[in-house]
Length: 168
Image 1: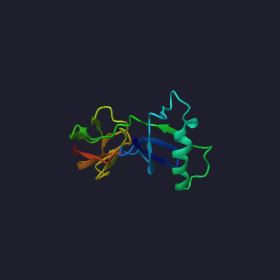
Image 2: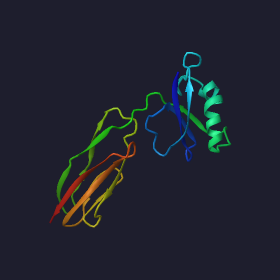
Image 3: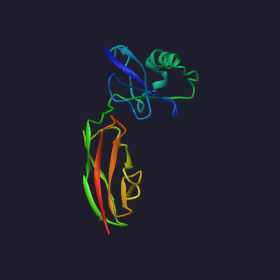
Image 4: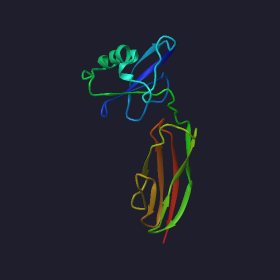
C-alpha cells in the first residue's frame, strides 16, 4: 500500500495526486494524504484513463477536498502525477557578466535532475538602476556600476545569483 498526497491549486482548481513527500506543484497547497492499494484499484493516469470515474477520485480526493472547503466538485481537474520530479538544484549560467551600458545577456540554467518537472524561475535585480532582468532572464545593463541578479526556482525555492558589472 502506498501513501499519496493531494496538492490543491485553488486558483486553477486543479487537484494533483502524487506520491507523498514529492514537491508540490507551484501555487499548490497540500490538501491531505491517503493510502492506496494499487493491486485493488489502479490509480491510472490523466491521459489514458477516465480519472474522474476512478475510485481514487470519488473516495479519496473528494473527501480531502471537502475537508478543505471545496464544494463545487463539477468544476475542477484531477491530475494523477506519479512521475513528478522535484528540483534538487540548479545553476545559473553564466555566474558573472560584464557588459557596457545598453548591452544584454541571457541567463540560462543547468538543472539537477535534468528532467525536473517544474523549471520555472523568478528573477530579481538588487539594483534596477544599474541592471534590469526580464521574466525570461534577459539582463539589460542600464548604468555604470554593478547589480546582483537572483534567480529563484519555484520548485523547492532554490536560488542562485549572477553578478553583473556594467561599464561605460
